[in-house]
Picture 1 (cartoon, rainbow, N blue to C red):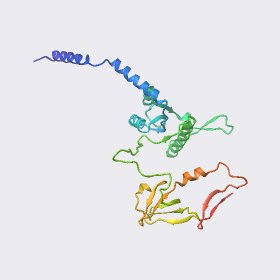
Picture 2 (cartoon, helix red, strand yellow):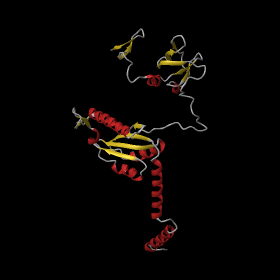
Picture 3 (cartoon, one colour):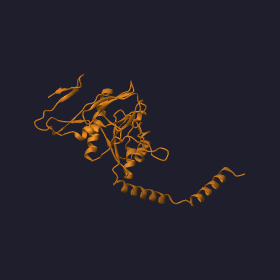
Length: 284
């Protein structure tokens, strides 16, 4: 039998012998640092996505949230504002990512976004926020506006407005999960296009207009037998009678046709509404 001190010494000798077979910790650190620098250099050529986060004591969730969206989106720029009621700061978490060079991190305080421009445009005026629900909504709106303006100034194309308890997912396409046939950019051959359409979920039908050669014709589908996910701009739906319709993306079409200024001398019609006779009413 070994005494406690002798057994301890034997364990130390065994551990030392095993550790001598492993690469030195310095070499491991150098290898990791080199990999991070290579990734950071490659990352400069990738646009990626950006995100605005307003947090309140979210440090337990934040590391996983950042790592997940870094790989999934991929997230490359993040601006975080901290609610003044928060008892913790995410500075240490953000600094670790900043040190890798893989992402651009910003930590804002109230002075960075809770301000308005004075009437003369020369100075900033601090916006006071009350410590209640209304004040939180005001703080959130100002942060989102300033954060999106900052990303626009930095030429960021995709900006995510989200909370730390929310995750973005997407459908992965593989042999067992093929790419869906919708949405599509134009109607398949032989299927009429339904424009200015509305979905009546209570009746399970869609009403809209078919743009025929002579004049637009208003139609209403029968009860739909399509999957709910197909009822979207660019989708193709089928009703109980077997008729199929292509649902035009009306907003995209209007955006393409929109003019920055009205042709002269055409007036501008504001507050446009349609009356019971489908006539447009508004103010000039």
